[in-house]
Length: 266
View 1: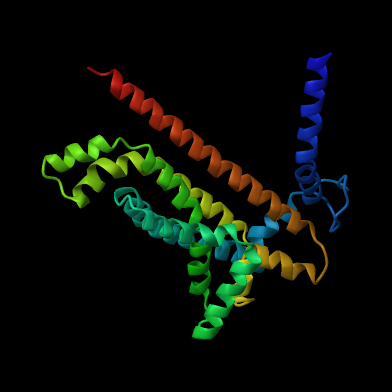
View 2: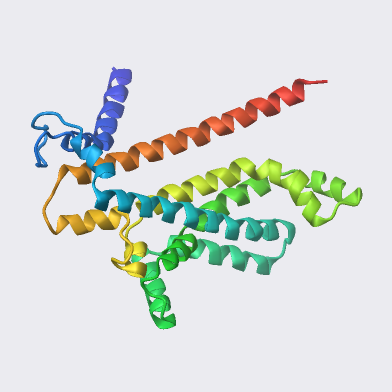
């Protein structure tokens, strides 16, 4: 009886968590321009519209560009910072880690308001590249945390042995450290990429409507009525995130397998 209740409980929780996605998926395949659920007919035209319609296609390209560049910049900031924090063990060094985590721990609207004030004061408000920098600052916490975990997993004796053999910091980092933290580097980039792709408030408050990402496009489209295209974009976001996270998991499993095989070799 207890086993049945436990399974019943988990089924209910699963249905509760999946219900929004089930409804959105159903809405996205309506044959007519309605948000009815269950769907009235079946059609994939709303998914095709994301790529066929110029407005939606440009928004998709803007979102992918913003996510790609901002995630890369976030990793570029987090990598030397986490390397510094790992090599230089000092109480004052934790201040830099706190500064790196702060933007993500604050309410998004607070961070967005601060970035809006900064860009407006400097006269760069509305420039597309400000959204890249803003997203990088906002999401730098993710690669910073993953890379910090990667560095903490490194055996310091490997670094000390390389230093004893005359290797400088650059050589140690390239030949010893970087191969070991690559999975954490890729994971941090993937997390920042996915969240940047879905982010609305920071992008909107730094560039307004001068650069229309998919979340901003959805908000703008709401002013003219609801269409199943909005639901299809949501499903696209979920599928893309699931694919990226699955690839990251498989990448980690592959590295573990390769490491185990290398250890077995004499």
